[in-house]
Image (tube, rainbow, N blue to C red):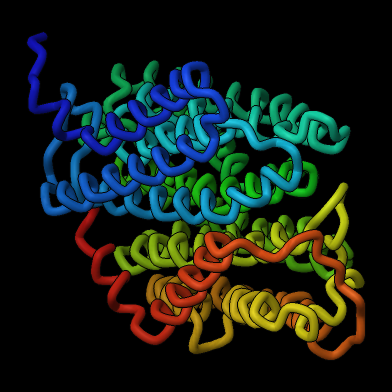
Length: 475
């Protein structure tokens, strides 16, 4: 097996982020008070990686490292999404981690290492490469969830995430082993070519089921969702923002690669399974979110419900369904990172300003933050002309076209339930008097991230085709 130097160019975005993360560790020990410099260096590295990913986007149908890595197209699309969400996370984190007393360069390094894992997931054409990407992302998240080391709730969230994540990893690894035992390979393109022969293999379908369990944990769908509320609540708010957006996008990217690319010929056997997971996630997520008083826990159950909406696209298993999932991932990323960004700017001390009651009167004290939060809540609830509406629209249409009209109806009804707790946030901000205390004024970087997210949500709602057309033809 000869090494091909051009393979390095094909994974240039991943290399740039990796070098940036490793350089941060060196800068931390060589420069006194390196944090401000590390922040700028990280942003420059992310911009360079984003440019490289966009440059490689037209180079589709190309592989590298002996068909283990895909280049351009689908991979580049998600690389850009991950990088943009990471930059926004850094913007809202700069002030937050200093206020919370966790202003350390390792914070940026760990996020970048998790980003490398995400990029490997989206580029994977081999189950082993996919597993490496998932574990690199997950281990980084375990550390980040407990970054507020002085808080018991943060330590608890990290421990719960680690233990349950390790349990889910067991399903993932065993599923990969069974698929390898049935097919004799871990390469996804080879498995795709053998799918007709594997139809009758019980071993193979057990492996697929276990792989589905592992991914269901990563996307926080019912019944593998129990970790999400506690982890989202206990982790630093900016980390929660990153996990719930970029992390979920990466998990769905891997899910799409495995299910829609490798098992496409036999995916009919999985239609009903995905439909059941979708219904359970939408119903449980929305109903439990209604009773929450903590905004982070509410958004955690909301995240479970949105995983259910996206799984409708898997049940449809059509080109529009896949494109709808990819559009939804992008829209959800901007919506959720914006919502958590507002919460991170209002939060202070130990879990202060995180409940509905503590958000009363925010529109009077901080009208810009309240307006941004209202935009994100409207979009999450699926009200036009915001991105959330078209995200659901494309997925519901795909379900109807494939004969899953009942599933689309359940999705619409679940969305109506979700409107209640999203609009409730807006009502508390605008129609109740309160004395919201902010420890310090929001930073320009943080506000910039909110404005960018709000513009993206509006732009994708008014001109959805700008993103949707980038998703067609990638499978």
